[in-house]
Amino acid sequence: MKALIRKDFYESITAFRMLVVVIAVLGGASILIPGGRMLIAYMVVIASSLTSSLIQQEEREGWQTYAGALPVARKTVVGAKYIFSLGLVVLVSVLAMICQIVAGLREGLAIMPLSTLTQCFAIGLLLPCLTLPLAYQFGTEKGRYIGMFIMILFALGAMRLTSQVSGNVNVMFDYVPAWLVLIVVAVLYVISWWISVKIYQKKEF
Image (cartoon, rainbow, N blue to C red):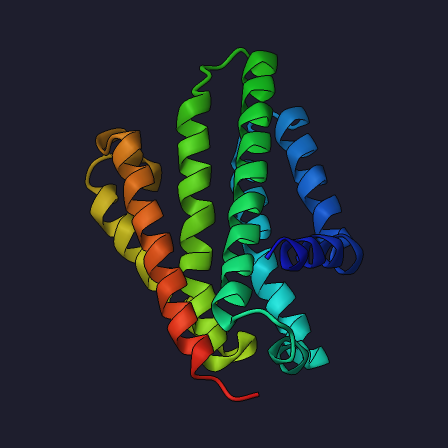
């Protein structure tokens, strides 16, 4: 599995270096631009979507067929993607927290680093929870559109539920303990991994 994760790391650096640059630019902009801390969320979304981009590239190159000849179980192939995605989200969430702290000190605003870390981590893992099983089932192209549709419906529903309170979707994090958010997201991530494994094991390449 280590070799598979290392492959994904090197491939993301070479094939998606522009996305890495975009994440760095967004981090700098969130610090330098007044009120730019909203850009932090985009950093996490981009990072969490990188795994789906890797799967899409592997589909174009026919890597799944080659992976079937390797002495590794399909369960391991899927698990490597989930661990890689988790590592990306953790890394960018910590980076987002640092940017939030620096921006808060620079603007003299209230700093809530743990809240930022929890929100970024939750948002960052929810995206692959949805998109990875869809990518394995329908392919990344069709799965992306289905995932976007579901995410829009979810966002609209969350906005409707929270608009009566403050009009801010983030208000849900004010009423739910951080530990509970992390537990729920972790459980959803494991369920998503299990579903992806079942789908991938039945695929024919």
